[in-house]
Length: 400
Image (cartoon, rainbow, N blue to C red):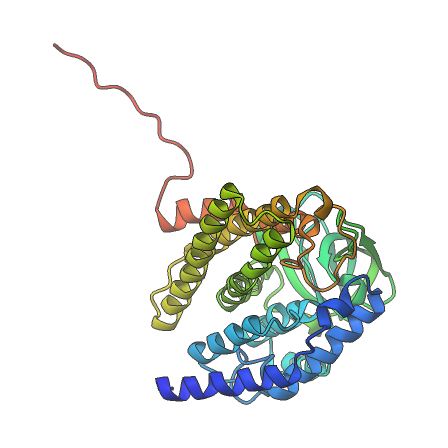
């Protein structure tokens, strides 16, 4: 698409958002109930789907699909600019579930599940376990084949929005005889099936964004196997790769457009003349700009086909660290009184203006989507080619 056409698209998206984003959605979500949060998410999702802006990353032939990366970038930039609600409740469905089905699912699975997703079915991800987070290959949840179905037993944890989910992307172990990765199988599970129970996890912020899932002899039809039995590790990598790129563009842009909140906080606290705060604000502005530039550069590499393994990890790692500094400055600027600011906001996981909550939530991004330690390993091993095990160096013998 030409530059002119891209600017036409930008104008169209910007006008639609101006007409459809509720100006007081943040106020409505402050101190709201779970029911109100779910209702807002469902309503906004339906509007985004109808406009074709929820699924620009889907293939051509699906509503809103077939957009180029350049077009997708514009849509996500404008959504961030308009401060539209993030589709937190539907993130797994729109990206993890849909992209997995497009890349690894069968025609029958796509026909069975994708229409329901567009109508508002909610998906969750059943990967992490109490003792298998970053080391996902060590998971213990079992899937035993019995005729035309699998029987699932085990537990998952840190599953985002699982208490609302209709379906689950489940990674389970079907074989313990070989390498850990070789015995994993990927299944699509009905969260309403007999034997599934969900327990929300109360967080320090007061939210319950995550949940534990327990499986007690839960039956999953063999037709809901994605890929081959024992081939779940490769499918899981496709799932996790789906959240790269555009998500990072949106998150960094949202942080940029939230910078005025810190300046306003400094002003409201009567500390506009504080030289240290003004200096630190300037440094944070520069780091946020750098995060946006890194995300843009990464997406340009994807568009040009020059992306390397580890490029996304650089953006993710830098974003997590910058968000921590961003929210820390907001907390400092608000002063002691700001730390007593009441009114938890549902559905906004960062930059809410409640700096205490924002700062606590910033730690999520050091873990979500791969911990900082995992990102550093990917960068060092896959991008820089550094050895996994340190070499033993010997000093040259002095023969003088």
